[in-house]
Image 1 (cartoon, helix red, strand yellow):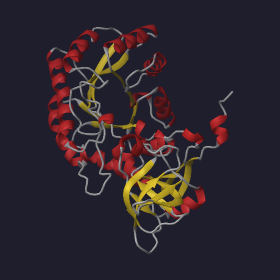
Image 2 (tube, rainbow, N blue to C red):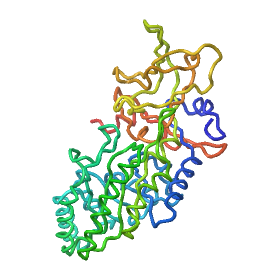
Image 3 (cartoon, rainbow, N blue to C red):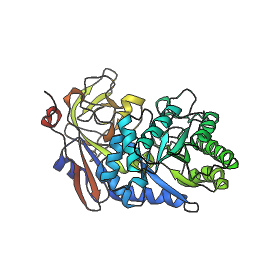
Image 4 (cartoon, rainbow, N blue to C red):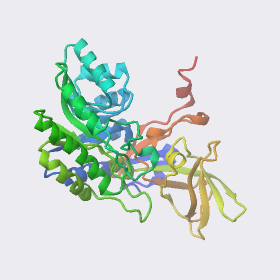
Length: 403
């Protein structure tokens, strides 16, 4: 079930693969995180990169969150979802000229600047348009997030941000520019963080810099501690609660008196989503295990192939009988197209529906058309009802731009 709706009925009606989201769960997650920081002035800026489906983004906005965009496309998603420009922060390495023009002329809450060169470009654009751009400096504190190397962003070897010392000098230089308004500092040390210390160290790095700038007469408006709060994908995996997260961050931010920005993504949407997939074949292996071949693959959920990530996999309607040891694999012509290795499932047969858990973040948003596979449909459950919120792509959709 998803809330009061049988998943098997959704798979039969909408087909598979199918991403399913719980409206109730999305709202509950936003409220829980917001409540953990209720004793201090703060804003939640949902990281749209986790899941950019309009119905999901709108639902999160409905619960009072603001937006964090990592591209010009995500800025437009935020606007179409109903966010005002002054509710959007713009993050990301390699912002193009056109993206910066859009961000400056819209008057976003902050452009999180990555380098001196980017600050110069923002300044030139603001000057050309006769406006003053609101910027925050992204700090790289050289903190190990303790997560997969592909999603660690706070080490000196990573491409993100500047050292605190470099940012200090740049902040004082840029504060003198007529067309730049330095409003904050930003840090994001990684994703799927499951211990408090990296989050505390990241927050402490920008809090220390904020105090140094304040002593020189530079008044900021906010500290943006990014996102990265992880979830327990695997049974028994330890993850931080939102109360533990707040307890790690607030003591180092509170002495500054500056408003706090958080950029949650995965923590909100991942547990609110499952991927439904149907078994299309069963093939025995030499060691007695089985290949359970399903109609969803790395084109629908890339994380296992990209990171070796774990997602729980369950039968939607289990059969009686002995369980089987198996690898759950997809139809894509790549050996890495495996959703789960070394799993144990109840007896399954061709035609059965499986649910892949915790796919509400970095699931549908990372989909591709490799092997010319259409993008899966997405559906939202609301109590005892549900609707398709993103229709299944067709081959005609894929080929409409081909000459």
